[in-house]
Figure 1: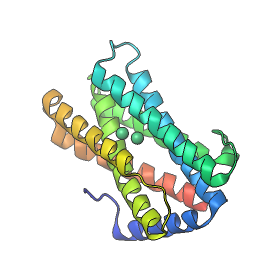
Figure 2: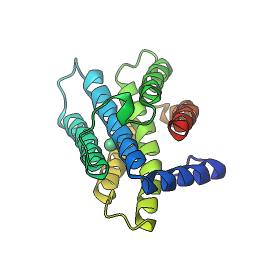
Figure 3: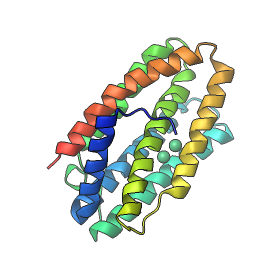
Length: 202
Ligand SMILES: [Fe+2]
Ligand SMILES: [Fe+2]
């Protein structure tokens, strides 16, 4: 598993996740935040392909990200014991989650320049790498806390998405090695900003 978090960040992420899992109300809001991020991801896939003929692989990716949003919402409601929505009170740092996606999208679009089909692959690549890192750590915390929730099938899908993006970029972009590291450099500080907002959310 590629690690993109520094050791200190990884420790504070673990501390944050342990604290969130220990408190039902906060845990539900965190899960609903993950649901919102998955929803924004599926919305981005849809918007980036609105003028395309939607190849089967993209349609499947879109469906799976929407299902992830639904999975996290379902568990958020189960843990929270109430109906939730995408509103600030039901999430941790809703505005920052939106900002994370918007900035990532805009900066990667700039990186890809005139090559209009590339941002979908690079944005997905950056997000899949981050999702794997975050969900993997969350899964460990859930296991240690003895919670019945597991992310195993979701992690398997994110792993497949990442492999598909890597494969597609090798075929489509001669500059993929250089652009992949530029994407990581774009996404890292945006995630740090999102994580700070989520950590300090009341
Ligand atoms: Fe996902
Ligand atoms: Fe994914």
